[in-house]
Image 1 (tube, one colour):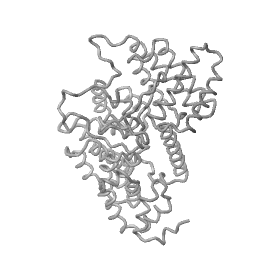
Image 2: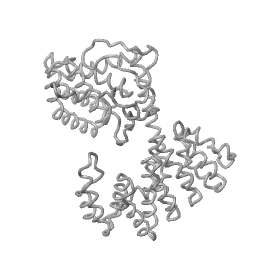
Image 3: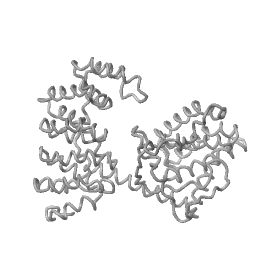
Image 4: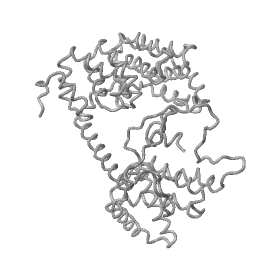
Length: 460
């Protein structure tokens, strides 16, 4: 076991990068023990935007600064509001309300100034607002004064409406009786929004319960270093490595993978004795397409299904059906065959029961909601809702901002999902192509800012 006390400051700081998400709690405790002299280098790491893009170091630096505490760490934590948004560091984004709130009322002037700074990104301003709410949650003696500050933001007609809505949401979490009327007005307004943050029913439920929802503000961000969390991340890393191995093998058509896929199909076929020959062939074709989709598009092992992947895969089938690849009978059978294949994977211990049930529900909803539209086909005056929009006539400034995706490059699909006709790719045979410039990965947050995954938002 490493003696962290024996390391120099430089060596200890180096661990923030080299240990990635495996840094142990004992190392964090050593930083805290060294105290004041570690604040400047940790703040520097939080200010390094490049580090947020490719390293765990600023995540650790933020959490350690929070543990050191006091107004002296505020520079670093405010830098983290920007860096975590740029680097999509969800671990930090989720904890910033608690981190900033831990400093208390002393942080309010700078937090409020950041909320009001129209030059900053909305997400960065929202994080500062959450820090104000965190201060109210973690310092009950100053709660009313802080909430009054947040209320003034809600009432500020010069403030961006999105920030005023977020201020109302923050107030709602405290269920202060004096704020109910104001919150209700914003809830009524939000009901006309295409993506409402809350509505009057939510407000009524909160106030009927009468219990503040302050859990995220009171959470201990150092739980990130608990042994159980370290073990859980180790499992995720192992799954990621396994997924990458399968996806790369699928792209290269390695013999071991072809043998494994054939084995899946043979065992699945053995469960289809109740189907006619045509139905059996359609079920196997669907299973083959599902496995190809999961490996080549989602970059996962062919059994790692969840409801979002199943939903997106079915949409891919529908796109091909619209393009004329599949006939009506095959199209109608696809959702049922997908459910059946997921059930087969469940029987082999590859998909858990909760996921199996949720996937079946999503596929049934998709079948009811989309299949008739697909079968009807596009009319003269109706665009195909499953075909990507083009923006040829729009000025370049209106296009989405580039988004950098740090997942392993997803191999391009080499076959259609329906049918076995090879579709040659223009990519080199030895390695998968990178995603198109400016386009996020399908599982990445959508660049439009909706907060949804790209594949469930602006993806074709």
